[in-house]
View 1 (cartoon, helix red, strand yellow):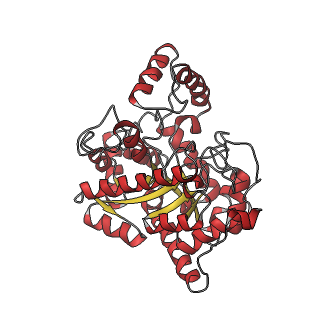
View 2 (cartoon, one colour):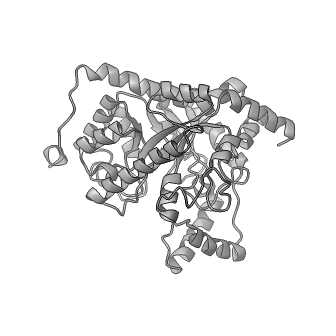
Length: 396
């Protein structure tokens, strides 16, 4: 991109900053330093260690961030719930540490207020239904603590919903899974369908009374990866009002990167690491593997190809961005970290996306979808009581 194109992108982002749907900084801080904000100063440049710090968020034109309060699916039952609470505690501690830079956001109005103040709205999303341990009371508690979306599954099935990367069991949602969606609607918590199987996506869209999101998923037609969204599902978003937030994870957006990633995962496992690990020690293994087996590099153009197709199918009112920074070992060239969003906006400007349409992509659609979920919750609140149904009652 030329300096003029980048300057135009930055000007646009000053007016319509990025709402990013998914950033795994909390888990990275847990993995690397046990959440110690003194050990890693996020007000300083953490390049080489993390994709995220406060200065790079500002340089990238980020105005709102959904911090993922993800916990590994290897944690089950109450251990998963406790770890999720620790993740939430970290996000609140992060915001409290930098009150001049960050603002906790619980509503769409909070997002707008943070933008007006020049602070980054900090929201939370739970990644995986294992975080509630099949308890609707726990779901309500997470909402009370500030969680504003829940991804129904992560990489493994939960007892009430199928994941995109596990063997089908429920073939969508069970009766209890339907009740989870209805309770999320009642609360105003966004139903996030990233990581879910296509059957789960379609089932949730039939059940939900509020718009859904995909916090970090791209187009399956462009790259046939199970983590991406099929066209028939994208085509339902205008009727639902939801938003698909394109991700940057190279092996989700590029067939060449997927093949290399499979080999790299074997190298990690041979060295004693989890195949998805990207701690500093794991990255040394990956870089050594990369030295002998050059890595195919996705680019901003790769991401833009997905967005172009998703726009054709779902329409501009139903797109957003969910980079998955600090949740992946590698990122596309030009989107190396959270400072890279202007490069993507410049790429889309070069493809003749209008400034009005880019404002919807970066800011407007995400704020609208949260506001719509809040509106549905108000409508349902007068008639629908909190559900006390259990998995055993509904699914036997």
